[in-house]
Amino acid sequence: MSAYSDISDAQFENVNALRSYPFADCGSLQDRLGRCLPSDVIVDLHFVVPAPQDGQLAEVSMTGVHISRSMVSACFVSGSNALSVTVSMDEFIPYFPYRLEQLAGSSDAGGIVTFGDFKKPEEPETYFLSRAIVHPCCIATSDPPKLRRFFDPRSGSYVSGDAEIDFSGYVNASREGNSFKINMEDGAAETLASECLKISGADNCGATPISSINGVRPDSEGNIVLWFH
Image 1 (cartoon, one colour):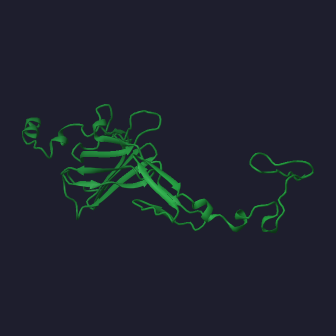
Image 2: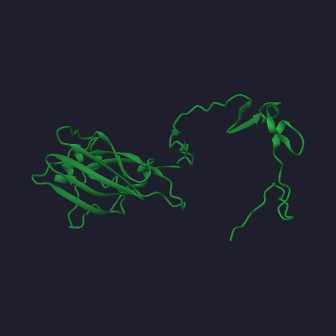
Image 3: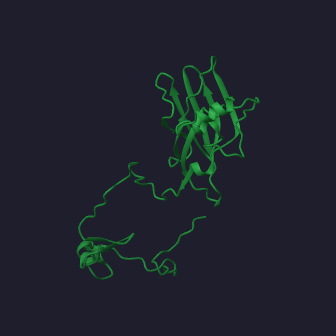
C-alpha cells in the first residue's frame, strides 16, 4: 500500500526520488558501512567535464555526502577533477539546482546538483561511497582549448580571455578563416634596418667581420661553435 501511495504522489519535481536516476543502475548508493543513501537526497545531476585523452567515455562518481540539521554537502570526482557543493539549511531550497565548485583538477569541469525534499536526520550523517556512478546521460564532455593565455616571462604578466592584439607600424595582419597572416609592409625592411646594415663593405660600422677561426669557417647560418675543455 505504501508503494502505491508513493507512486500516486509522484510529481515532475520528485519522481527521481522513486528511482536510481540520476545514478546508473550498475552503481550503488551503499556506503562503506553498509548504509544506503536515501534516493530522495539527490534527485538531479548535470556535469560538463574534459573528454578523456584515451578516447574512453567520461565517468563521474559521487564520493561522499554529509547531511545534518545545519547543512548538506556532496562531493564528486571525474578522473583527476574533484567538485563539491555545500548548502546551509538556513538557505536550503529543495528541487533547486546548486552549482558545484572546483576542488581540484581542470577549471573546465563543472556541474549542478539538485537535492530533494529529504528528511533531516537528528544527528549528522556522512556517507562515504565508492560505487555511486552518475548516469552517462547526465554527463557532457568538452575539448578544452589548448591555448590558455599569452605569458611574458620577463615581467610575469599575462593576458587571457577576450584580448585584442595590436601591431605597431610596418606590420600587416589579416585573418583568413581560422588562420591569421602577418607580413611586413613593402619597404619596411629597408626602413627599419640599422645604420650598420645600410653601410656596405667589409668594415661597416668600424667592425671587421670574422670569416674564420684557425681556418674553420662558419656554417650556412653564419655560426662558429667553440668548445672549451
